[in-house]
Length: 443
Image 1: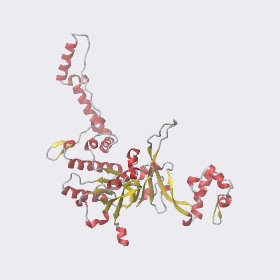
Image 2: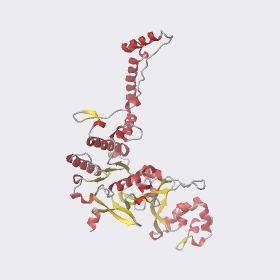
Image 3: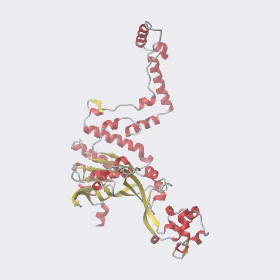
Image 4: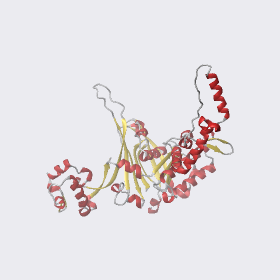
């Protein structure tokens, strides 16, 4: 599955932006042209969260608008085409046409005279596919109440000369029968002229389908702190990498580690008897000798031995570039390279690689050239090209010509902004120019 086309409306500076996407795309343009808005709109599409939407997220700060981020995916694998959860949402040409929307819902106060609250964002998901023009054949419209209304006007339950009720074989079909026969009727009696593309909103279970089947989208903003990336939690990429290591430890390896930890405990605590360190025994004895002058009591020094899980999930990252030190004390260029490395490895963990590849990846980076010397920037381009050549996709914004190649003109998307007054208020709109290879060939 590959992302092929994106339409962004009412998101930040993107009033109405359409972009063709190939294996690798570079967003170029002046500061504040809208490059980051495009990348962050895609992040909202793939990783929706209400924390990413506030009133300023809407174009021109107008929260009465609807943010709309629409995308088409093609080149689905055979496994994706046959995926039982995904198949109902695919178009006949095996493309997947989706959208996310965001609206601002005002929370009205229940008490009279109390002003309304500031509201909150609501995110919805949609899919588009050809549907019958007739509501009585649309699965989402078929329910008990609608069937009662449709049966009042039986003469309209026809396509051409074919009577739907005669096809069903009963005058009053139940909901389940109506849905089953509607599918059969569509396949047998409808032509392309009887279908039209229609958007379907928030079908049951659809959010889970998107999460399970869409490409894995990794976003690296221009400013990202290595401190957060190097922590080990169950939610951040580095932590997930190490928890995956823990899961891969065999029972025998874990038993060997536990024997080692048990030996350590015996060297430190009374459980070790004669094997306990003499210095600890002497210190404990001195404390008890003094304590006995006050009251009868036995004081024991006990060291808590870490578990295997604790040891494998609480490391610190050190980098040796001629001087070994924690990565947080290294230069920003090296820190950024380490962030790229962590996220690349994490993506392979999530998506798989080679014959074990489970899902594709889209790697989106804001200004990858930051803190990098010219040769390193050229190397970054080679790395990105390598990712794109392995059936994944790369999208990045840049101010550096070293990350571009005129031979690959179709990779470049030029982003510009224009200002105009609307009802006396200054507004900014992003515009894009690109020359996809197919457009070049057609021309």
